[in-house]
Image (cartoon, rainbow, N blue to C red; front, side, top):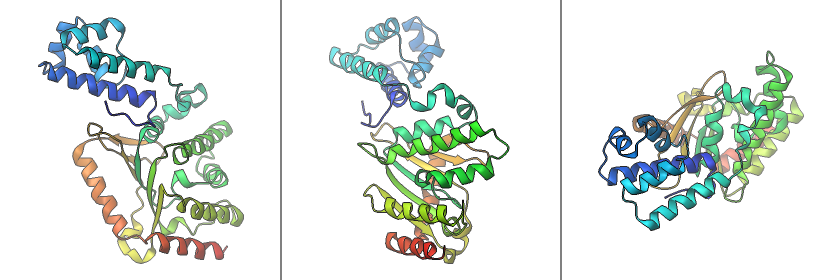
Length: 292
């Protein structure tokens, strides 16, 4: 079973579901309905398990091993995976204080990021979220969420900063981020906040797992392509790449549909082809900083 060292309980559960689906197919049960009859459970239960929505309970797991004729060595691996997944702490974004943010559609992004091995981000007219300073995020929230409660804005800032842990953990995610030159010039939060934000970008760009590229005004139409999207890549041949298009009110729509992912890859490649290289990007950031 291919699981990343960075995966949390949710992604381990998803990978286990994929593994049990492969085992079912290998055993000759082409449909979940046929398998469910032999397992003496509902098709919905089989579906939930294979989609990574629930851990299999002990009685169903034993029947799966028997009906699918799973070798003992493979049974041991599966049980070890379940023990590992259940032993991991509850993901931070499932803590009660973030319930409203999850209801607003932010949940998928948290779990997708946390389990990813590589991220390809186009953040459009904003500094990439994973690269924003606390003061920059606070300024965005103060304006864009002024109709929300103070608590909601504070939670937004906190979650944005907690998400950035994926860049600095023991096995950090590899980030390739594109953004428009128009993201650099607005003096978000005032000159000092923006100077600090630009210095932070330069510091991040020095890290081996992070590549930042600006699409300059001179790129023409590409410099006006502001719709944000992210490609999430996972380790293992059985794990699918996911694309998420950001929504205007927060959150986003995620899909692993092959055609959608191919379109997003082409889009990212087209935009990257119009972007400055790493050295040129740093030079532009420094030039903007000197104007503040």
